[in-house]
Image 1 (tube, helix red, strand yellow):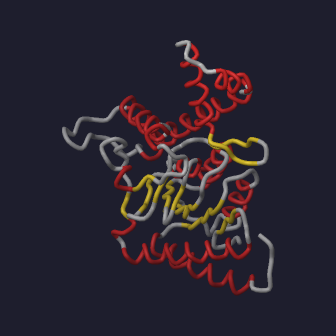
Image 2 (tube, helix red, strand yellow):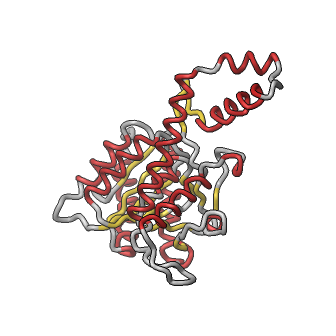
Length: 287
């Protein structure tokens, strides 16, 4: 982020927010805000290593706010965070969309309140100079192929189909498959690690059952026919509902923590707006 004459004042204010949340949670706090782009993983690494081995806790709270980005960057950030921390909690005050949702699924726990949202895991890839949702292209391709097999393709649709880049479509497929693979891996490894018996019958939970539940969640979150919009928010109630059945802790159950997290979120959001920063990472030793 660009340096200004107000840096010292801003850092002191933000450090105060971080200190209060760390005391409340007894965890190191790592804030990750903005677009998930190449280079962000380096700043996450630097923010954690700046804490110093002797001062670093074994658990962390990641306060995350993002509209998504590149899933390969998410994978590297998770590798970095898990190198240092045994237990990771994600705190979503506002939103963690697309790749941000996949990021949150790498946590041992997720905290949201009634206002917080995750999003469909429709991976975004660069096309030209902008991000595009990969599944939208794949579904349109599949629709045109199915219509062609039935002999119902119009001349305009045929022209559109012939212009699609097969290599690009393969890239979209790989992005989709990677998103699902990572979500399943992290849910079974971290989120479901303490799921030992079912809620109703108290049946022992097997590794196969954990994998099946992770697959069901991945399929539900990647079904953009259900969500209709790449940017549609999925609330805590919906995540815990019958279709997805993902346990999400209630940030609102602790009003003091909810207030602290919101105040910190407001400060970081205002800072990003004023500096026009694409993203931001902070720990108590890094800004």
